[in-house]
Length: 259
Image 1 (tube, rainbow, N blue to C red):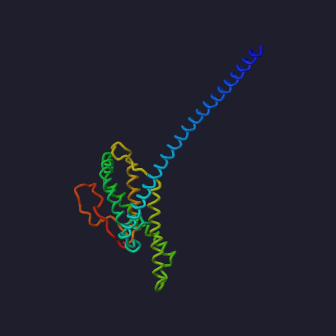
Image 2 (image 1 turned 60 degrees about the horizontal axis):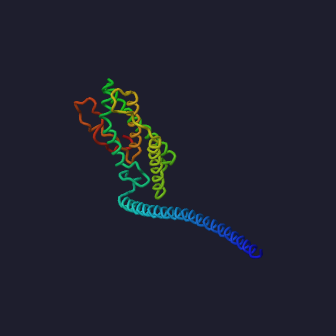
Image 3 (image 1 turned 90 degrees about the horizontal axis):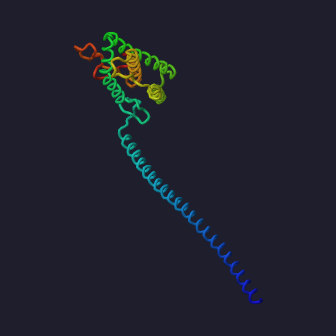
């Protein structure tokens, strides 16, 4: 009996040890599983870190390239820019409406003209009325800008005789004001994002085309009139043509303030 009881005790101890071992083994497996999951998450995080480092390095390289381009641009422009307040012939960093830019915008209008002309001709518009519109809008622009400059002159008291450096400063501030007015007119249209009518469709609304043409002529005429010295299309030296729709001179020219 004593031996039998001792055997049973041993069996119980063995079973208890087995349970402990199984529990420990289960805990160990859970820990291994947790470690694997954590390792996966760690690997994912490390991969993201490497990707972010690569993107950061790419951004740094792009920034360095842009900074070098900007420095090169500033250095190049600085060598070309003259005092546009006095001449109006060069473009300063703060003035996108230089004389050369005005020439480009006028040339853009001349490039658009064949499509505009085709639309108006196909819709039976008379060339004389279209020519009258063009001349009228350029003339109205010149007159209105001349009046605005006269108002600016009154504000700065240019009818009062000043001497020495005072007069020079007054002239500079006056021209800066005119230039700011020019930039405002230029920017307002750019910000408005006005779209030209679809000029390729002969069946398009000719009234829209006429309004676009008149608006472009007036806007460009205002910018030209505010240049220093003022500019306008060279109407006087535009040679006669067999084409009754040949309205726009090839060139623009400088004019006096009172011309």
